[in-house]
Amino acid sequence: MELFSTEVLVIGSGVAGLMAAERLSLEKNVTIITKSTLGKSNSKLAQGGIAAAMTVEDSWTNHFFDTIRAGVFHNNEELTELLVKKGPMQVRHLINLGVQFDKSSDGEYKRCQEGAHSIPRIFHAGGDATGKEIIHTLIHRIKKRCTILEDHMAIDFLMDEGKCTGVKVLNQNGEIIIVKAAYTILATGGAGQLYPVTSNDSAITGDGLAMAYRAGAKLTDLEFMQFHPTMYAGISDRSFLISEAVRGEGGTLITSSGSRLMEGKHEQCDLAPRDIVARAIQDENSQVYLDISTILQFEDRFPTIALQCQKHGVDLGERMIPVKPGAHFLMGGVMTDQFGRTSLDGLFALGEVAHTGVHGANRLASNSLLEGIVFAYEAAEWILHHHRNVPTSEIKEQETRLKEPSVSTSELKNVMAQYVGMKRTSAGLDFAIKLLQPDMMNEVSKLDFQSLERANMGLVSWLMATSAYLRKESRGAHYRADFPLQLQEWKQKRILRRIHQDDWVKSQKRSRTILY
Image 1: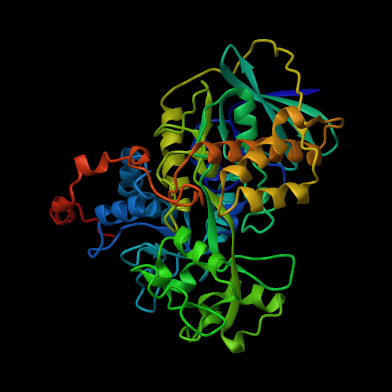
Image 2: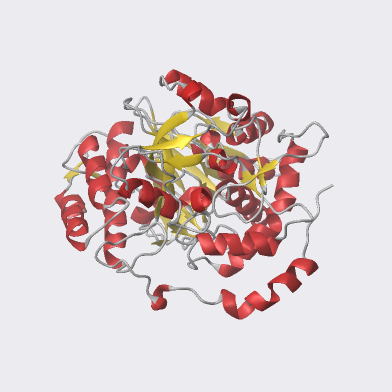
């Protein structure tokens, strides 16, 4: 068993983990472990862009209320305000690091509009490859400054009297490595691979959530899994994401009969919040198409999507792309504060694995990359101002007893889609809970990547089903067919006490943020 130490350990290599590593590695020894290759993450797949109020026409209050409304008033008010206020500064920081956002011929940054945004404020790169541009920029900066362990999978946190002191790691050769750390940052992403149709990278199997739960960290809001309305719905087993920015540029959802799907269903029509659009597509008895006929230079504006369409045999000359919803983003996760600190001393969580509360019950489009960079900076600054020595005490033997579900991985995904998907009932959730409860699982006989993933997927699926069962109302991404109404007692109403609608215009005038 190999043993080594580091000041800061980052688990995962999406935008949140890499942003934190970039800042911290300027002053501290940083180690990054990732179970696949560096940068392979949901962040790298992010198409649409990053939202920030950075023009005279926009303001943090506009962005704040758009975020709160999309989140169906379930957001953490204080941290949502922090997110939208500090977002512009962090976008400028990305630009200073070398991120090349798209510009128009006059040299101004291009901005597009996406669902539930009241104004175009989405900065994008490479047309529809924003995440890829950011990830590549960060990797270029941190490669020479950080110790990087690829193809290494975290098993469990090392705990000593309630403190996280590092992590137990497995490499592809089956060897155990103990990494001691003064601070550990969990940035492993969400859990989209629990579902058969997902926009998520193949590595996103809920590992960090399962590790945190086993260690005793507090998790919350796991019932809120967002389903993106427009995944490719062709005959191929492999689907792919079609960015909401396509609808922001004029794309419309059309039924097989040729009528507009969202007409009369929401005041924002095709740019309604994601949960509303996704359920409308699911409720339609026939195939739904994304009409791109009004986007004259589609292949230039969305080169990544156009290439995927070509690979899957979609004739873009017909200007119609078949779509269906797919698991996209988990709003719940490991509870954190402003600085990413979890309920376990020494453990931080950032990005989709974390629950800051800024997304509420339904994430606003292009707020995910924003959350990653804003809270990564907050966490890094806190760590830089609070010194802690790397643990020197002898490692206490911690037995790893993992259980994997009795059903196959494909069966587990189908159970999640049918009973813990876009529409849920008490009976369906009860069935899923009983099928997936840990007491019914088998102990893992061989410790390898596949078995670890299955154990984590089974545990997180059970946690999500249980959370969905306990919330007996419908709100945002969580829809209960047997409890279709929103309940006032579940609604966070604090925002109306601090920023009243009557004061909205006044606050806009006081708080405009201008770029260049």
